[in-house]
Image (cartoon, rainbow, N blue to C red; front, side, top):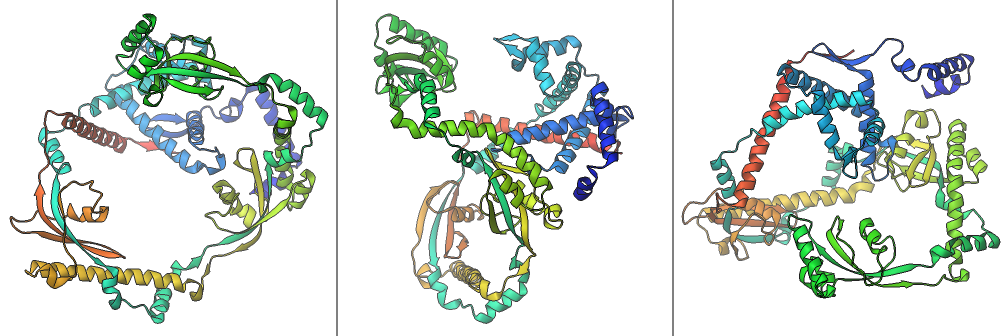
Length: 617
């Protein structure tokens, strides 16, 4: 398909179509293309009501943007568009079913109700007051009109009311809560004796015939995946900056422009930090009053500040310049005069009183001392101006070129090579899944085109092409024999240890003493809880899986790894304590009730969905 597009993009028919599109867009806008020919197309019908294509595409775009925003380095090529479209459509169908259910129950909001909700939403407020301009711009940035947003709120609010009503109706029986706490807080008394792998070493053997037999029986497990060798060009801001020369005259001018910034000001602050809770205002007022009465800031910091490290030093935070503290803290600090104390300042850490102890300013460094730093800054600034231009040129030339040599020569870049890249990736830049997906696409592997230009990092873009493709192939026995031998040895050692553990347990249950069965002694644990770390997670898993022993007897089990077998003797089970009036009981009761409510709501949703008549074009 890509080849057809490339071949026909320059044709007369294509030019006519593009011209008509431009005229349509300029006169009527995008609706002329999307909906102008057949009204409002739908993507599904639920119980006779349409889900429009416009609504569907808007939500697909919003969901794509949401997923991109969660990426450390946003890359559209990593999105699975088909999956997003399926999930969005199903969510719209489910939403429509719930909205219809709310309508059937007579649940609705008036225009006044909608107004009240909107004006209370913090994202539409400025200085604590509703701001219409903020509201309109925010809604438009979401790709919606005001009327459309109000209607969406009307529908979603009543659906949420139904959900909240069902979820909050969940109930957890007190006995169920108590039983779960008894199990959760239960402790156990047990003993452990360990059999090391050396005790069964004589029983374990792996021959060359065993290795070959396993290799033949599991040949599919020893495949070398398909691979490509690739040529690629990297365009990076850093490398571009390295090519830019900065003259001495330009450096001198830049130094003079930066002189005022290079004279760094640092401020020594002290603070008193309190937690932002119910009593914060009262506590802060008390501290301020004591300061007004002549109390020492340092003494008050030691008494009240929850920043225990600085409190021991009278709240002293030392010297710091701009860009170190929280924005609100920094703004307050740099507005103070020496010796002055700020009004209360709220940050994510709590509420602060800030005192400016001292200000110091450094002289402007000599040009010779910072010449390299300034030269690099100036080169990088200029590189940023060129990077976007170079990126566009590289994308265009690589798209139409039959190789990478021409685009590389045009921009003065180097063609590099990478070998043995699999679908799981390879060394950078082929550790980027979007680039790898492009590299293994049919257009690139089969038709010999270059990949698209892919952004693999901040200001780093790559275009690549396949030089050689190798299909998956069987790895020779000689190459994997060592791995096979190690695997068989581990499996057989584990089996031998398990057999030894089962024999020891059988002897113990038959009345034999431990000395008769194994060299080793019991290690005892009293009242061990589930999160006991001393005995090991695998042993504790066995301990708490064993049946309660009869009075005066023990229950036996084992935990086996390739390096040892642990035989466990469970002697007693101690019931966990339950305080039906305690915080733990209340929290667990609420949690279980919430789970039950969510389960009931999920069943209710599924019932409505199963009853709905859904048609898709």
